[in-house]
Amino acid sequence: MKSASRQRWFMIIIVLLFTTMACTMSNVIGGPVERPVPSGDAGIAGRIWHDRCANPPPGVGLPDDYPPGCVLDSLTDGLIANSLLDPDERGIQGVELNLAQGICPGELLTTTQTAPDGMFLFAGLAAGSYCLSIDPGLPVNNGALSTGRWTYPAINERSGVMAVNVVLAEGEVRADVYFAWDYTLEPPYQEPPVATPTEDLTPSVTPTSTATIEPSTTPEPQGSATPSPSPTFSSSDPRASLGPPTWEDDLVNDGDWFLYSDEHVRFEMVNGQMELEAYSPDFYSGWSLGWRKDTNMYLEATFDVLTCSERDTVGLVFRAPDVGRGYLFGITCDGRYSLRLWDGETMSRIQDWTTHPALKSGSDQTQRIAVWTSGNSIRLYANGELLNERFDSTYNGDGLFGVFISSATTPNFQARLREFLYWNSP
Figure 1 (tube, one colour):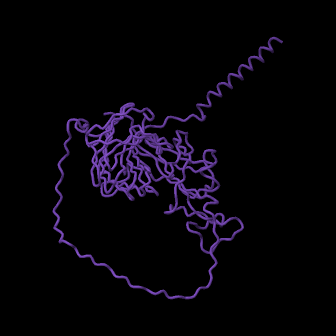
Figure 2 (tube, helix red, strand yellow):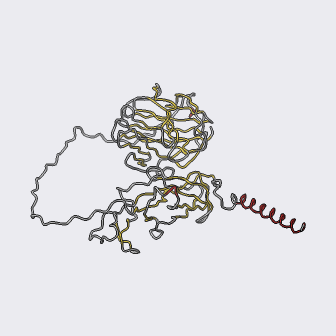
Figure 3 (cartoon, rainbow, N blue to C red):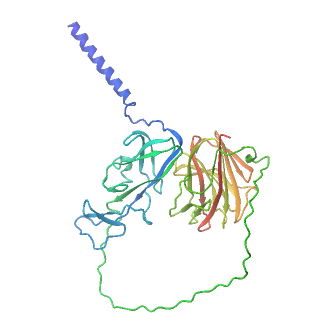
């Protein structure tokens, strides 16, 4: 009896030991713990948009003329969105995406959520193979991806997990990873109007005159451009002692930027400059970020600010943990500057709007602004002069950086970014 009792206790101990090991190993062989993201200069970006088609409800026959954006679905003989990003279609906010390493499904590395315009970004990646996936069945995606189905990059996935493989070379940025979702009940279907006979009227045509504008002066012949001399910097200007930058963008294409346009702002490369435009004077701050990440750095941008007034603002975004948060160092048309923090919901002022003689005021001005970060220290510069030093520890890890624009009083307020440079850990 004693021998049998000892054997039973021995078996119980073995079972408990195995159970404990299994619980511990769950964190190693497929538990929810995120893995370290391979670090590098590559990135994956794109957008999830609402592919619009006003589908007829069940029991209603197909109209002779399909609603805008709809095509025939050969699998169901019903209608489905056309898989094209049409001008009236908007991004979907709050969709969670998974980034895994290797061929799909891969091993989970990290997740992110789409911004209000449907855009997403995984930056600071190493070269290699990745799997990007979206699961509409996750609770976090239930609200953003209500009843519907995928239409891009494939419609045969229906409403299940959508996954794509992306292979990155060293320093490569893939900004063309797009997904489209067609909501079953959005937009609502409307019966086509019943045509009624109308009287055949021939419209009268009223000719209009074409104005001829005579030149007030004879244009002078234009000579060839004279190259500008290299700029010189005062001894107090950080540019005087930093040496060659870690990175300088030639602003020729979008290879290093997340460019886009929506109902608020536009960012576009034109003739070796980035054009920034804020459509409405609503104080909305829209930004475009690059793919690089850094913590301690000197970041500088030169803007040509066009017609503006009062609080129309351009500036730098830096230490952004993702596309929806970060610090904003802005300068206004009336010669003020500020340092603010956007946490995704609230804008906080670290440095309130303050005047400074180094800032130029008025339209058609060129402003060279910079920020120097070191730990919790944030130093703000304009045209080679130190404006102020502030301290904040909210975001003091690696973050994205870029530029922003905001209109306070001027419709279609524009600025042009002519130079963008940064130094790592100066």
